[in-house]
Image 1 (cartoon, rainbow, N blue to C red):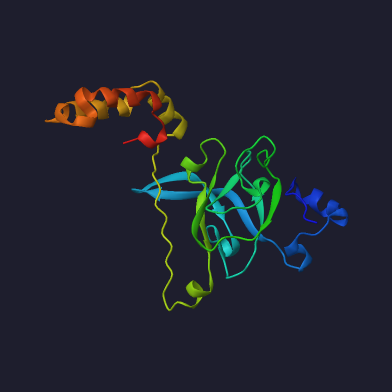
Image 2 (spheres, rainbow, N blue to C red):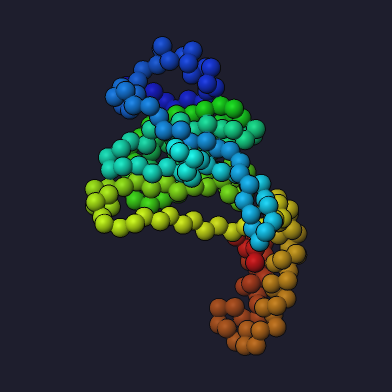
Length: 221
């Protein structure tokens, strides 16, 4: 029998392990890989910014798994706020998916949660589904090797690209919802483009003006 993922503190985990029915990885005597939701300081154009981080074993971002290795991970929330992490591209039991269903509440500050499932091989990523933590770089690689990729005679270099602004995400979103700010500037510039009215799918900018109602963080210039 497989236990459901739990939201617990370190002390609660130690106190409760006597009555826990083991997961497959636990039964094999394996220890979960640590993954810490924390913070870091990055530098952009010579200016420092305090952002989130998902740090795995040996202080490296994210998780890298060997062929046939289970995703057996202890997520430790160390950001003094709730969080929940989604394993993008994976198909675990819905209770381990990291999407904030009503039945899977966020992980509280200073709490841990254990995940244990068989992953899908490939190059993926992990990211927060709590508020706008993803926009503050609560993201990391999730790489699951298969036999072919493990044996390939190549040097592996992982690069993640992400939008960044020193302006807080909440402030950017508030500006977008007002229908002005950056979106207003973009619309003004586009209205002066020659030939715009002759574009069949965008005649008279009517369609573009209708899109303003759905502005979100993906619409930032």
